[in-house]
Image 1 (cartoon, helix red, strand yellow):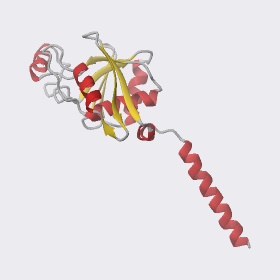
Image 2 (cartoon, rainbow, N blue to C red; image 1 turned 60 degrees about the vertical axis):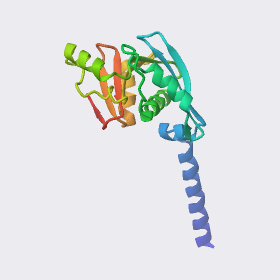
Image 3 (cartoon, helix red, strand yellow; image 1 turned 135 degrees about the horizontal axis):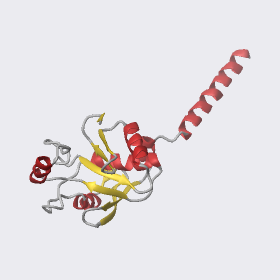
Image 4 (cartoon, one colour; image 1 turned 180 degrees about the horizontal axis):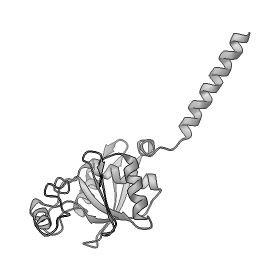
Length: 181
C-alpha cells in the first residue's frame, strides 16, 4: 500500500512539473507553435512599408519572402537579393521576445558588392566582407524600444552577430557566427 502511495505521488508530481514547464513562454517555442509569422517593416531610406506573412503552417511563403526581399533591396542600385530566411526568423523572434508588435525600422538591408565597396572606402565602420553583401544582415531599430534594450534582447537570442551603434541609433543583426561588438 505504501509503495502505491509513493508511486502515485511521484506520478502526480511529475505530471505537475510537465504541466508547469509547458506554461513557460520561450520565444523559440512560441515561434514554432504559431500558424504564421508576419513582419512589418518600414524602410527609412525609401519610405516604403511592407507587412508580409513570410511563413505559414511549417513552410516559407514565396510571395511574402519576395515582398520582404524587395523592401530590403539595395535601393541605391535597385538590386533585389534573396535575403537569408533565418534573418527574417531572427527578426520575428526578437519581436516576440520584446513583445513588440510595431514596425521594424530598416536602416540597411542588402548591399550590392559595388555599394558596399563604396561605403567601405568612405567609412572604416563598414566591413569589407560584410554580411549585408550576402543578404545575411540588417541594421534596424524598433520604434518605442530603447536601443540598449533591443541589443540586450538580440544578444539573449544567441543567434548570429549583434553590433551596437548607439551614436547612429541602430543595432546590426546578422546570421553569421554568434558574436557581438
